Length: 341
Image 1 (cartoon, helix red, strand yellow):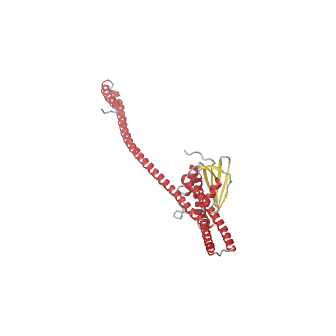
Image 2: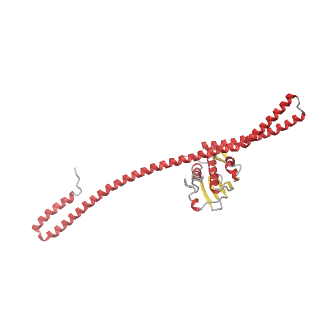
Image 3: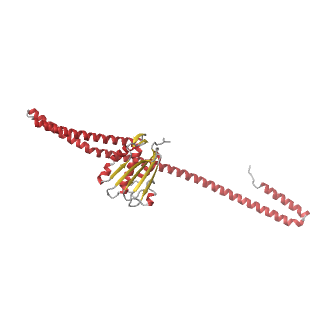
């Protein structure tokens, strides 16, 4: 059954024509005016029909446009999801690369105390072998025995001191590595966490004479994620080495910590490097933004810092910088990190 939108108008026109025929008999003077009125009504009806056809066509075009828009929206959402997945994969790769650098730092740092301990042990073994040979020959003198005791005392002290140093380094590195890899929540001393992180970064700092100073209350305890904080500090240091001192010049970095109130901590990381222009400072936390593409800059270090401070520590981070006057990052976060959602 077809629905006629203009059925009433068509019926009205038919009745008007019949009425016009009747008027020619009873009121012929009114016929011309009446026919003009009927013609106007017919033109109005035709215009309405035309407008309805235009409306139908526009509705069809609008429906097609909406379908295309929905398709494009779904494509954009899919592309955004893929981009986020790729970005997350790159960020995880960056974190793993940081752990790799930490392992290299372990090997480099413990090489010195272990090397000294091995040399001392070798020297003590030679001295012991000499004394043993003299004892077998029956020619051991009081002087020989005294010299051996002096050598044994000195070498064992050196061996013990260097083994203890190596054990401390390994324990510190192990804690940092475990914290970064597991993101375990625990209570920790902030000053100790900072020092352990800086020790792990010494292979990067020492060769060019960079200095990092720390000012932090020794009794400041936090309840949160030390691995996250270690990752943040490591990224800030590496960023300074890459951008603040890019030409191998020695520089100074400073970490200053203060407790703003009973519940919050402010950490300032500053360097005396080259600083940055305002247009760079405004984009410094954007993913993949770097001024040293292909020269050691990935554009992810400070983006990871921002994400960790805001996401994991539930805090905030700002940056201040003036060209040739250095850069300062200011982190403000709670002493007790709120539970993750």
